[in-house]
Length: 151
Ligand code: FES
Ligand code: FES
Image 1: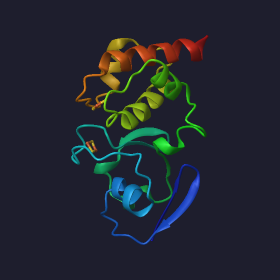
Image 2: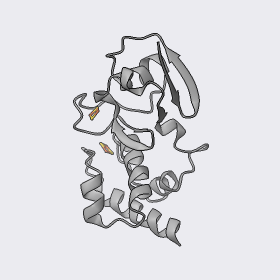
Image 3: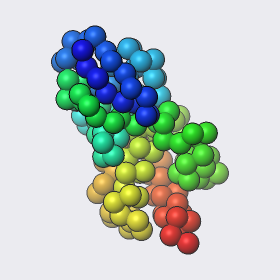
């Protein structure tokens, strides 16, 4: 039995401890906002917050989250109204959207660590891959979120 919290709610899963956290979330808890891309820790589509830090859930056995607090895109805000989510809509950041849940989780973590990141810091911290090439809009929305948070 693995016990952990997802978006503040406690869960106990009877599950193979080697199961990647991504599949525990998607298949066992029906939280499908976190996406499967590469499965090998490269693309970032599966990014969640693990005890407050961005982490690629495809590469972490669920046994490693015993007692942890996990935040997924479903829990980033109560009503989809995190400053980043609002700006993502307002500034039309997504194209197909597939990568964006992971990008948003990484961006939320970045802004906690670096309140006013430069483009270089954004690029260094957010290594998530977007096949649609939305990087310029991602950078612009993060910069504006930083301005609004720090205003
Ligand atoms: Fe996890 Fe690509 S699916 S990094
Ligand atoms: Fe399509 Fe990023 S918006 S992969």
